[in-house]
Image 1 (cartoon, rainbow, N blue to C red):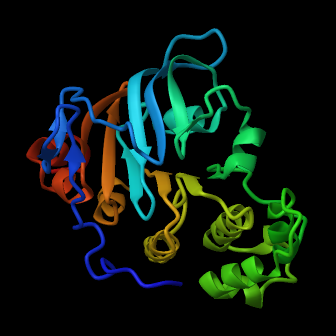
Image 2: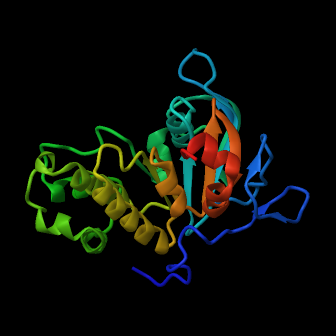
Image 3: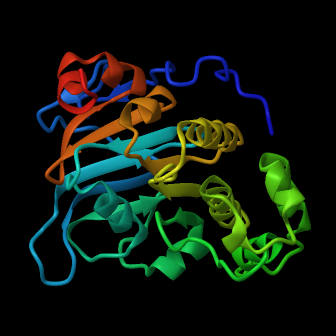
Length: 273
């Protein structure tokens, strides 16, 4: 689905992280080090907020991703990973901070309006219509489009061949990994500018996890930025261009996937040594 000069070096690309004062920083950064995200394609910038009138879960949290990148959010249980993703998608009100997409401030937009602006979001659960066929699920993904989406559907089938084979089958009858492919495919039917995945490999076998990661890499090679929350931190960082380790809703470590995997503290604290 398009050439990628880095296709043999996924996870070791180490795109430099720029400091606000200029220069670059190639190693993992800790202790809340501020990353310049002024020109990032998608950024949730210094986000503070929680659900309803409850306590804040995010505290000056910043995450960003650029075209062609895979950015992953990892951290311990309760770190605010999925909350950060939902904040970027507009599913909770921010008390501080902003969200920008392709240079436009979208902080005030609803999730529906963010989809119209180019956000594709795949939640962890309840992400398919189980009673509809695979093909009907994909058609539902194109609900905001007014053009001919058949070419996009063929691209989805090219990416996920098993879905073409099972296109007439009810999505609820598929395996967990196949359901996730339907969910990602449905998001791609919107022709998103950015794809956001919340725990895409939750509950699947290691073999299926590897296959899903392979497909995610293929999507990124088309130029679509991917922001992903993932419980399988080591495997996710291996394919990541950029990684964010959150602890208690704050940025604890930021860097390339390669640098975070090589960081002794990150390995010891979050990756099992």
